[in-house]
Length: 263
Image (tube, rainbow, N blue to C red; front, side, top):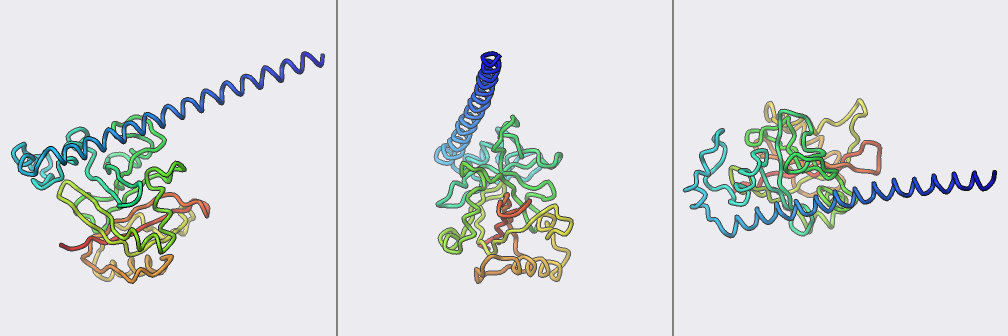
């Protein structure tokens, strides 16, 4: 009897190990596939930049997209990715961090790229994506979401902005769009819970009704800031909000806000 029970326990242990091994192997293969895809996208982005000038883009009709939103001065690498998938509307990077990714936009479906890769296939990492509430070009505040991956990928680096010293070393965000290259200066970093029933709705502010509405929002942001950057924003500034999960509280979010540097 004891041998029979021991045999059952052993068999169950072997089955559990086999199932665990299968899932671990599957997770490893998916991660490897995602890494390969990100490298492929970077190669397209960087190789197109070095091998194609803006004049070439112009000759090929860079300004002739169906919606008329592509500028002749668009980054050639972004243009190549946009041709590959029209949902790709930007490329964001923060020097000195792992943040160096395409930005997707699929307003027809909420959180479409939350668990999809560049080509729409399942991915635990997902993509960085612009909120469906935003317009890529007319919104006063463009909100970009991304996962906080334990691997350090996607928007995990945003968590380091809790340290003001990190902010001082990485104060700028580069964002290439189909209208041209933009640089943003970070002015506030804060953490906040969501789905509490009494949230700070930073994720719904996309366009100011007037100067007073804008200043109320900026004031609310600055009141929640982890530290004073010495920088603020005013009505008329174009804002960029980066948002990811934050694990020191239930349903926490880490938010980094920046304003466009006017050329």
